[in-house]
Image (tube, rainbow, N blue to C red; front, side, top):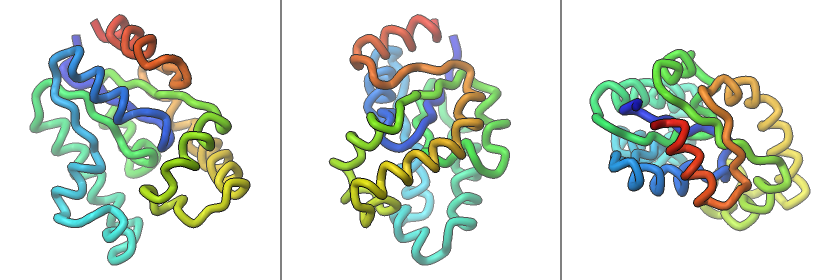
Length: 170
């Protein structure tokens, strides 16, 4: 059984929700990479983007990803939606058991409409713009996400997803 389990997928696919429940079931620690980045930077991701830009953020993200995987014991790690797409992060992730939590554009749009205020990248988008944005980004990122060890459908009941993940991990 792998001592590191990595969840990847588009924002809103359920990485954090699934990750917390999976970690509890496996008796692992749950870590959200975005939280670790904010701790390392002593500020929010939004403020990092505003003040230092995406290139700086992506370098920091890679550094924190490597550090987290090297310095933590048994963990379930939820990546940021873009993490697998930059700085050869997939090579780092590829050393561990990883899962792409796959959701379609309609499911993601429905979930993210409710969370817009908490997600700076989509906060100002109108519903029709949001769907178009998700569709384009998902299309760009799919080639990275599908390189995970396993693909899990994220639009199923949470209990079903957790049971499937546990079965694949153990």
